[in-house]
Picture (cartoon, rainbow, N blue to C red):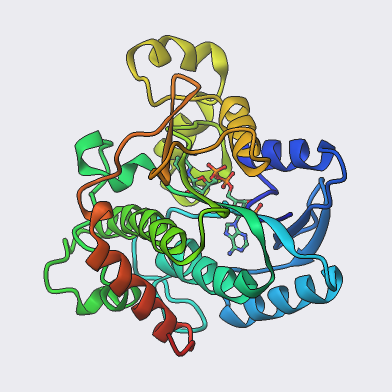
Length: 296
Ligand SMILES: NC(=O)c1ccc[n+]([C@@H]2O[C@H](COP(=O)([O-])OP(=O)(O)OC[C@H]3O[C@@H](n4cnc5c(N)ncnc54)[C@H](OP(=O)(O)O)[C@@H]3O)[C@@H](O)[C@H]2O)c1
């Protein structure tokens, strides 16, 4: 099993569960040593780090195929002005491009009956009314270079939110493309954990949001809100469900690749209208390949 985003938040809970599975060997790509599994250094802000990580994974596993790939790491930033060493907008680069490259580099060693889970977010869908600027497109070139996007909202916070929600739209589209490219034995899921307070996700956001995010992570404060909002989930519920998906204990109904956790129950709704576009999925796959230096 190979996983990103297993050092913090609900990913750490999932990682812990995965190490307890029978015959499990969990390799975590992480910036810092992880409490569970074996860690190999991975910084998703650098495509060279992704390449080195994929090479190390392949060397460590030898002839053993990767049976589970969990792409869970992610960031949300207060604006979209940061650029990675490769010159791409940071949120898009970490959440989508780096994971896309990792997926492509590990595709040849994925087991035939592999499970691939990409963590997305309900915020990719404007119909959810999550309060964040919804994605307007999944044009990889414009997301990598938002200053070229003529339709962009110039307000820094809106640009940051758009970078996040659009990167999560990319996760759903990538899951759909992957599912098309693999035969029926591979299970591909884009997983929306709902809203999970108390994780590290808000650490780069302004102080009031960061504080509210932490406080609402306390179950006593979150519980009354959960009755009103079906999308609110605890870290435990979100992490255990991610582990269930990764272990194949929860599987998609035929034709579904998008899962959403509501009131701690896994549901399989349709993703957003943009996420259902085959044309967009195909274009994103090809444009992402070009941006990370692959031929197709
Ligand atoms: N919390 C929510 O409400 C929510 C809702 C929908 C979707 N999600 C998604 O769920 C996933 C997990 O989020 P979370 O809420 O559990 O947040 P979190 O606690 O901040 O976890 C994020 C994980 O991503 C890793 N990461 C971030 N940048 C990285 C980089 N450059 N290189 C390598 N690893 C990196 C972090 O590693 P470090 O420990 O080194 O920081 C951490 O393990 C994310 O993809 C997020 O977008 C969260």
